[in-house]
Amino acid sequence: MMSQKIFMRRSIYGKLISFNNVSETSKCVINNVRFESTVDPKEIEFFSKMNNEWWDPNGHLRLLHLLNPNRVKFVRDGLANTGMIKGDTSLPLKGTKIVDVGCGGGILSEPLARIGAEVTGIDTSAQLIDIAKKHALLDSDLLGRLNYVQTDIETFEKENKEKYEAVVASEVIEHVNDPQLFLKCCSAIVKPGGSLFITTPNRTLLSWMSVICAAEYLLKIVPVGTHEWNKFIPPEEVQRWLENYGLKTKLIHGLMYNPLKREWIWSSNTTMFYALHAYKK
Image (cartoon, rainbow, N blue to C red):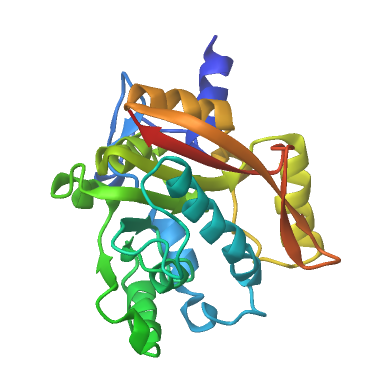
């Protein structure tokens, strides 16, 4: 029983919790094995160091740039399918309030704003928020549609309950300390009838071999240490948690990367990456 409990803690949080030496920045409730914060300082430091190449389409973040067309379409089509938008104009997301959680340098926030959305990008990294703000100034069409805030989701949630038609958490949940708390806060800021969009790696043997062994260590597509396999979460686990927070999963797409064509493709296979759309009842 003890070994099973330890494995579960590793698989959800990516680390063992020492109850004898809990720092002020990562306190937890022992009975529920929960952190008080979703913020992982190591993750913030890691991604903040890439601030100078955040907008380089051929740099270490090129896979995120290549994923953008799929991510934007996923959000646009999802909101259209739930009746939140019409989706048949040049600005299909016009007037739609969206939060991009863990926005980084704004790679996804900007294209969502370009098709009409009123986007608030939040991130805990001051360096990345600064990069996002400076890059947004290069496009006058984004004026008034895009706002960036340095904050964590717990703090943001307290003042923004049920204020947004959509919350996007793309390639983020696998980098937080407490994924359940993260999803609870994301769910709380979704309006009734609104949607939550998630993209993330699955926790399978294939994802470990491809996302970490191949992409990080063999092909060097992304920096070593970008991912921790134990922090990947299966879609059925995310779906179950969201049900507890009042969101029903509408669909789950598989995502696969074709290195020969340098493009992401939708798939029925969710063993590597998946995109999940849930809406608030």
